[in-house]
Length: 335
Image (tube, rainbow, N blue to C red; front, side, top):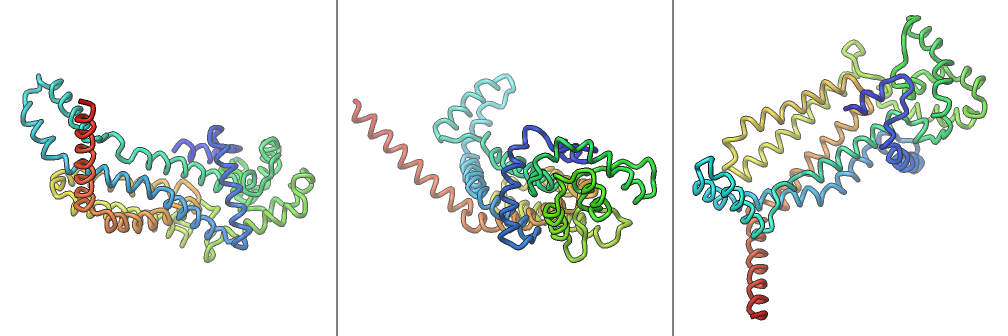
């Protein structure tokens, strides 16, 4: 969230800790654009699909952890009934820890790796979307000249919008959006940076960020017509992802259906929050979220079919039995 807000400041070039990630993702994006003939949106889709594939082992592990937790529920409930008195909280916690240790189960591992990976990837995506001149097109000295460039184009921007007090937000995207109006001034003031070949690259990149006539460098607004389809699709696909996740959890763990009310409320909050944020960021970010949500839905359905809880639980019981017998055999040999 802080990265998204920072990106809107006048001459921001990203968060320092994520700049190596911007650089790496920028190289990958540049390669994809070359291979795909400057098809910007295909490149974003491939980025998203590859990331979800990389996330698949984490999600499968999460599914197995949830299955293990479900299998242990009777034992957990038995321990909880054994110590109903709050004064026996220490004994309860100790027996719970002993149970988890015997079963080789760590409930704290559920989903953390996946969430961290997703957040890191999102930061990298935001970097190449907001700072393409520096990280995708490789204008390495752009950062050192950011303030000077800003000072040159600001009067031109104020003239475009008809507001002498206007300030530029999303600096590098603003250059892409109004490059034709800025080009002459940039070439005149920074001839070594904005060469003829570089200007051609920027124009081509700018052209690639148009999807069916929608300018993806722009921030959606209700007054801007059809571009509001991006936030709307963000909301719809996010709700779809939450709904699929809820239905799968309810089917796989009927015992947890009593808690579905509070869970559903939390799951609905995130789609509407992303809907709100999609009006604060460029349409390109919203497009990434749409694709990410669609891929997430397919991935959830795949995992639910390939790793159903009952089958996973049965497999875990067999593995635990084999492990326990092996441990007992080793103890006998030692004696």
